[in-house]
Length: 176
Ligand code: MN
Image 1 (tube, rainbow, N blue to C red):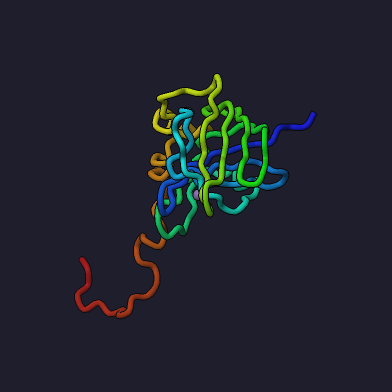
Image 2 (spheres, rainbow, N blue to C red):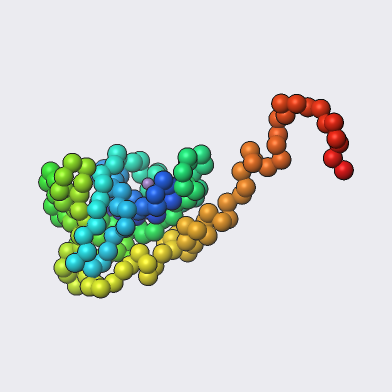
């Protein structure tokens, strides 16, 4: 028995809030950034931008990436489970997910340079008219939303209490 490949969908508050869909291929995670996230409605087409492969460890991350220039860097594991490949051809990938929120067939099809479209296959797991990312916003690991994760973050040390010499060390008017 060989374990099925994993999939993970992370919600990432970076320059723009987006979802990262990652499908295991051997020792890496093939990845697409999906700005609006996946849908269980087969009538909904979602832009998916291919990004570089990520490590398996990256797909386990839930927390706050420090030092991001924009966005809070918060990442939650929005869904995860197993992914069974159905077709894997240049410019077209279809697969069956068994996750906590996402299940059934999905297809990714390349429609342009760095532009793919993610759609739910019409099957028994399809839920026309639903909006799963709004209905179930929280992490499947912690139950927290990305906003709750961001709010729990400690204040940055560099922002607290100066630290380091001031340009002019003299205090002509001492405080207090
Ligand atoms: Mn990302």
